Length: 268
Image: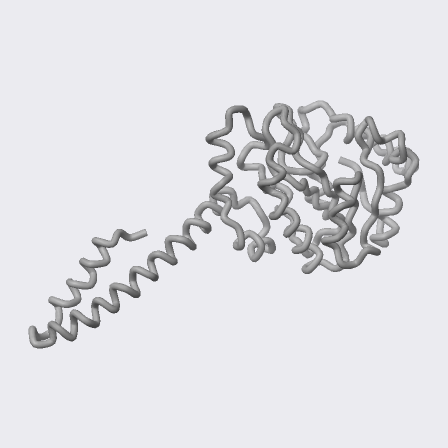
């Protein structure tokens, strides 16, 4: 933002560059008005650029999301990471990794709760971890169910990174909270829930063919954000505590493919 002193200089330079001194008063009035307009203009530019620049620091998202991102000021992200008394996950540059997919090309939205809260796990995609990280229990159970449902496809899962699902299959791996404190599940949920609710609404409004996979009671509560309930596939969460109470043997992924009307290559 330009300082108020610089704006005064602009105004009075214009005054004394007038052709005659007899026009001084009229020029003064004109330039005071101009100065007021400039101040308002630069205030607005400052506010817009503040949001724009803060968002650009982490702009690793597809342009199709821009209308949604323009509604939010993400300057709080720097505070979350810089002022936290313990590590925040995922790394800041990976917060919006899921948003690299074009909203109109999403085939399936899989909703998670929040990122893994241990070191070297979360990288911005729900249920997914970096390739060199041990496969977490919930994801291991997802793999087991996929292998049981599609034995003819001979899936072999050797790592926990689901990046290929996002890049090649159009699967949007969204967490309801995009960040988390080390060892503190749901610690940032209140910060992100309004935004990620709007993300679901945005997909709902811009991609009417998207299928929503909601696993567990937390995810199922988001069904109110989705207009076409026929696009929703619901099931038990794959966590170790719940998987044997309805996730295993549920044919949940066959149901997703049936709702989509197409097969998905679930290999990683």
